[in-house]
Structure formats: C-alpha cells, structure tokens
Image (tube, rainbow, N blue to C red; front, side, top):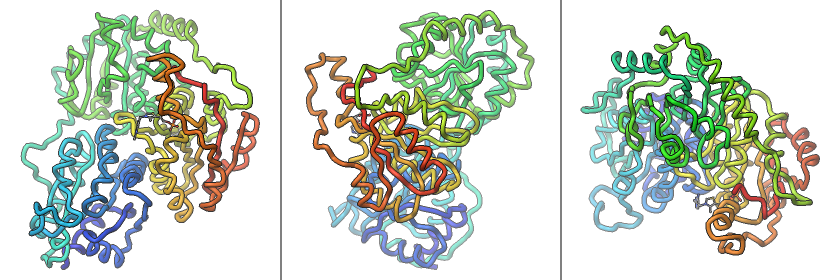
Length: 541
Ligand SMILES: Cc1ncc(C[n+]2csc(CCOP(=O)(O)OP(=O)(O)O)c2C)c(N)n1
C-alpha cells in the first residue's frame, strides 16, 4: 500500500471524519490519497488559522483535532496555532509535509526544520524517516495528544516517504518508554488532603481548564455541594461550574472580579484542580494572602509546585480524583464562611457601568444581552483583547454552555477559526464568536470558509477602531496621552466585507438594535456578522 494511503487509513482507524488543511508540493501524495477517501477536508485560507480550527473541533468533541500543512512556509505558518494549543493543553495532531529525505539539511526549496522549531511547544513531534513506522507513529501521536496532559503532536513526513510502498499493519497498542501518565491519585496524599480540607475554616476550590478537559464538571459540582465549598475559576475554567449556583464565587486574576480577589484574601485553604497557577490568574495570590495553603490536583506533575509551594500535591486525572473525593466523608459546616463570601460579593458587585459614551454600545451590556438571549447549550468563543475580558466576565454559564478562548498564549485571531471548528464539530450548537476589529483583520479571509462550508456561526465584532487592550495598557502604564501605534482608523465598513463574502452583515450602534438583530438571526443556521460600534475610549483598565 502507498504510504500516503496508509496515513489516510491510520486517520480512519482513529475515527477521524473531518480535517482542516492547506496543501502544497510536499503533501501532494497525501492529498491524492485524501481525494480518494471519504474524509471531509476543509480547505482553510491561511495556515495561521489552521490549528485553531482543529483546536475548536477538539474542544467541542473531546477528540483529537487534525490538520495538514505543507512544508516550509505552510508549516511555519502553523507555529502560533501549535503554541496556542500547547499552552491550553488542547489535543491536536498536525501533519506537515517535508522535502524529500535526501534533501533535508540542504536548504532545499520550501525546507524548514519544523520538528526543531516546534520542539518547545509540542507535547511530542516526529520526523518520519521510514514509511514502515507510519502505523506506529500515528497510533502513538493520537494517544499522546489525548492522554495525560493533552496537547499538540506534530508529524512531519517527507514527500518521498509518502510515495513509498509499505505493508500496512494494524497498530492497536502503544508502548512509549517513559510515558505512563498517572491517573489515579496517591492514596496517602488524598488522605492528607481530606484531613486538611476538614480542618479548613475558609476553603475555596480554584478550578481551571483541566476540569473541562477531564470532563469532570459533574463530579466538581457534586464535590462542591457535598462540602459546601465555594468555587472560583480561571479564564480557562469558565464553563466548569454554573454561575447560577450559590457556591459560585467568580473569576480570579488581573482581569477577574474584585470580589473573587477579596475572597482569596480571606481564604485559608485553596484546593486547586486542573489549573496551572498561571501568572495572569494567580500571580498576586502570595502578595494578597501570604498565609494561604494549597492542595493542588493536576494530571501533570510538572505543574505542581512550579510557581507556588504546594502543601499537598495530588497527581492524577481530575475526574477520577473527584469521583473518589465525592465518596469520602467530607460533611463540613462552611455556613459562616459562605455568609462571609456572600457579604464580600455584595460589597464588591460586578459593575455594568462604562465610561459615558453616546452613540456607542456598552460591551458589558452587550455580552449580558447575549447571556439572556442564547440557549442553555450555547458556546461563546472570544478572541484576545478587551473583548476577551468583557466576554469572560459577563457571559453567564448556565446549563451546558461553554466559553472558549486562547487563555495561555493569548493569541489574537483565535476566535473565528476556533468557533468555526466548534460549529463544524457540532452543527446543532449555537456558536457565537466575539472579536475585536484588530483580530478580525488578521483572519478575515476565513470568512470564505465559513460561507463555502455554510458554518452558521454568528460573529459579533467589537469595532472600536483601536487595538483597545494595548491602548488601555498604554493608558495605565504611561498616561492617557501616550497612545502610540494602536489606531486602526480607516473607517472600514466590516458589514460590506461580510457581504462581499456572501455573509449577512449588520451594523448596530445601540443595545436595542443589537437585541433586535440577535432576535432575528439567533434561531437560523446561517452565518452572519454583527458589527457593534464600541466607544474607542472604553477601556478595561
Ligand atoms: C498575535 C498577537 N499579536 C499581538 C498581540 C498583543 N495584543 C493583545 S490584545 C491586542 C489588541 C487587540 O485589539 P482588537 O482585536 O481590536 O481587540 P480589542 O482589545 O480592541 O477588544 C494586541 C495587539 C496578541 N495578543 N496576539
């Protein structure tokens, strides 16, 4: 069998139905094999969006997202997407073409050492030198991507290797020396944790994206309710605990709620689950509460104690550990602490106010409106910038709603392709993408994919003619008249851009018109773009 056909067969054996790609000379044999297959191939418009599509697909399905790029510039264009998936632990397999094996190292046409380049931010990567390794390497790559701490795995395949003939064999087992993720928590540490939790006066559960990746939301809810411990989440953890639950205590971090930080100030024990103690979220914990003690549950031992001294580490799968914890006798009386938490929440309420601006939309109110209008299973994908902060802080998680963003790398232009990936994976889900005009201009060519594939996402574009987040940072670091290099002032009519791609475009300047448009479009399955005018002076800072 041709090696390229063997690759397709490996993908089919991994239950891949859809992949995202952008071809070139070094993947021609693979594309010929794909042409003859039943796999759905979605041609994106720029490899910079490629991994984000696969990432959205993976986040929605819990399965590995797959994408293909050619060698050289195609492969290097995927780098930011790979690093984005790496920092957020998203399982994707990236297949890249490479120049013929005898040309490697000669600066051949379209040669780039993508294995070397992605070494620091792939979970693992391969350069296939023997076509007979294809079944084993694909099996390993999928297993690595979606086990233990999940993440991207890259497979680089020289063109001439794709053309060889091999004897295909089914590879069903994986045996990777030194790779055996710990899933079950250490009994002794769990015992210590239980004693510690029972003796705590003011405990808080701090939960991150790892809970979502482990599909442990139900167990978390049960554990919180059994123990009556309040729950705070990171940005990546938004979606793992319902906001209408009385134990919900908000989002922490430099862009989180004030009340959540105030709660952390008073906490005596933080039980961290599937959260990597990122600087943006927990960087100030030691400063605001030096007496805080920590239990840290994480699938990746390297995360535990990386930034904060942890008292009780538990390595393992969040779902399995929580399942164990919910069966322990942890009947606690936290009523006094919950009273205090509620009082803090009341003292520092979430503000809907913005600086005054006429003829503009208050973005907080806008996200709030979306929260009211969307159904209980809607998925909101936000970009990076002020729009990310507003979306995260004001989108209400109820039912099975989710909120996806580029949390770790903070990659602009993530949301549109990632939202499209979510919708491709689950066409019945309401999928909203919120982004700024800066990010949109980095990836607007992807509108062609959305039109062509009829991907019914609703794009809510915050148009403030500014790189708002950077402008805000300049304001807070240097003062108001120190803005430089942040103006996007050329009055682009984004509605017309959408229409040029055959996508309905709307322009709204006040919240009532926004409500009207959302009512009109929300139930249909057509893509659309709603351009919302935001006051350029509005800042999150
Ligand atoms: C690829 C990339 N380049 C640069 C940045 C730095 N950055 C963070 S937010 C931001 C501004 C985003 O502007 P826009 O998309 O208009 O959103 P807004 O902040 O106005 O909501 C920039 C430049 C980044 N995060 N990612």
